[in-house]
Image (cartoon, rainbow, N blue to C red; front, side, top):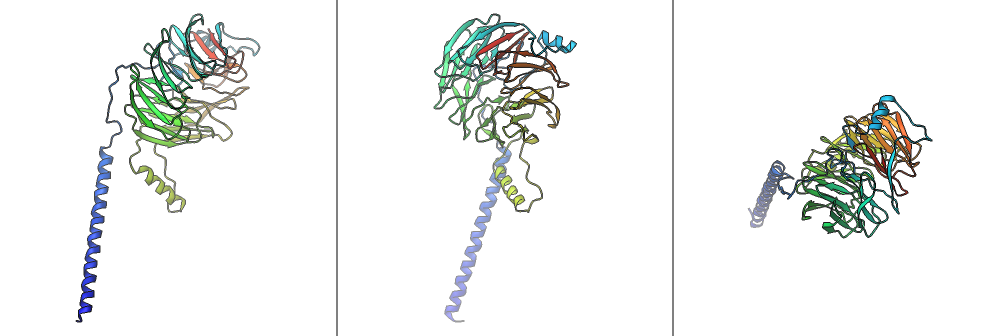
Length: 448
C-alpha cells in the first residue's frame, strides 16, 4: 500500500475516533443535564426558606370588623352571617322601597373636601378612610366625629388595613406607613422609588404591598423590616390576595403572579387579559376578572417547575404547525367565563360557592365557583365602579346614579334600594348593624 494512502486511512481513522469521543462527551453531558433537571424537579421547593415574623397579627374579618379592602386577606368581599337587622327584615317580608323614598336611617354623614375612593376599614370603635383631599382619617363609629388625621402629600385613594393596634396605608407619594390606629402616630414607614397605587394586605405577621416600581414587598408587620421583595417585571396597582401558603396579585403586563407567602419565590405566573382589579381566593381556587370581559378560575396550588413554560411554548408551536391536535392547557386552568360585551374592572366577590362579578356597564353576574356557569344577572341603571359585598343572603352594590341596591343572592331580585348624594365610590361595608359607603362627592355614610 502506498504510504500516502496509508496515511490518509490513519487520519480518517483518528478523525472517526475523535468524532465518536465527542459524541460520547455530548451524550454524557446531556445525560448529566437531564439527571440534574430531574433532581431539581424532585427536590425544588419554592417554600423551603421560612421566616418567623415577630408578630402574628392579621387583617382577618373577626366579629363585626371589616379590617381591609374586600374584608380580609383572601379578598373574598363577603361575610357568612347577615348582621344587618333591617336587611334581615326585608328578606323576611320582601319589602322594596320606592325609588323616591329612602330605606334605612342615616346615623351620620362625614363630608370630606375631596372624593372618597377607598373602601373604609371598620373596627368596633372607629372607621378608617383615606381621602383625595390628602388625609388619612379615623372617625368615631357611633358619631362620625374625627378622632385623628394624618396628612398625606398627595391625593390618596387606596384602602387602609387594620391589624392589631396598627393601621397600614400605602400613599401616592411612594410611602408605605404603619400608624398607631389609636392616635395616628407613625410606627414605621417605607419609601419606594415610585408611587403606591395598591392597598396593603396583612396576614400572619407580614404586611404585603405592590409598588409602581414593579416590585412586590413583604415586611414584618410589627417592625417594618423588609423580609423579601419580588421583581414582577411590571407595575402593580392592586391589592394582593393572601392565605397561609401564597400571595397572588396582578400586574399591568397582564399576568397573575402566585408567589410563596414566606419567601417570595415564584410558584405560578398565569397570563390573562388586561386586569384592573385584584384577584380573590376561596379554597384552592383563585378568581380574577379582566377588562376583556373574562372571568377565570385558577388552581393556585399548581406549581410551575423549571423548563415547563418552555415545554408548553414548544407544544403550542407544534399545535400551530399542525403537529398537535389540541393546544396545551395552561397550568392551573379550571374554567373561563367570557362575555365580550362586558368590561370587568372590579375584584370578584366569593360567597358560599358562588362568584359575583360586577361589570362597568352596570350588570352583576352570579357564577358557580366550581364550573363558571351563570346563575343570574342583575342590572342597575348606572355604571358600577366598585366591587360588591355579600352579607349572609344579601348582595350589596352601589352605582353611578348614587343608589345602593340590596339583592337576594338566591333569586337575583332587588329587595330594596336607597338613594345617596352621588356616584357610589366604595364597596359597601357591613359592621354590626351598620352599613358604611362612600361617594365621589366626598361623603361617607353610616346607615342603620
